Length: 137
Image (cartoon, rainbow, N blue to C red; front, side, top):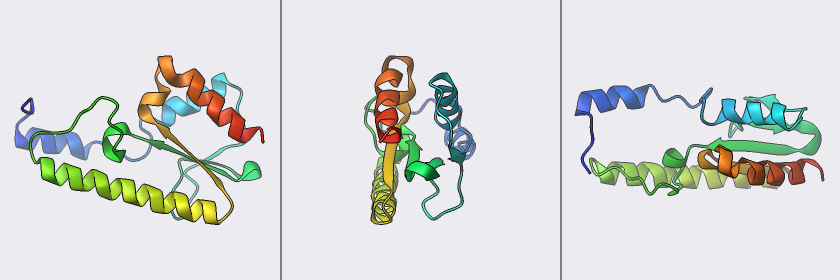
């Protein structure tokens, strides 16, 4: 399927995607923290790897990864235009994510990676159960 936008419009749309404060990822998880009574987290702690949330007392780093950007094929979406570029971009992101996970685990931290799609209504209970299991250790 061809892109519904022309090249300039697509570029403008992609430039507006931000790594922080996304409603479908970080802000959604904050709402779930409140709903599940989860406290003790800090957001955007300035450390190499930039976890979205940290729980110092549990030594847990939480990353909320957008499905498209981090290579989760839950919706099986991959652009037809400039496909080679996007494949390489996603592969670089996957390798970077693994490197950051390794760094945190070597420091003795538990890393939880949550996919954007796991925060949707039908998946959120399983996701929060998995997170609570880590935090209640």
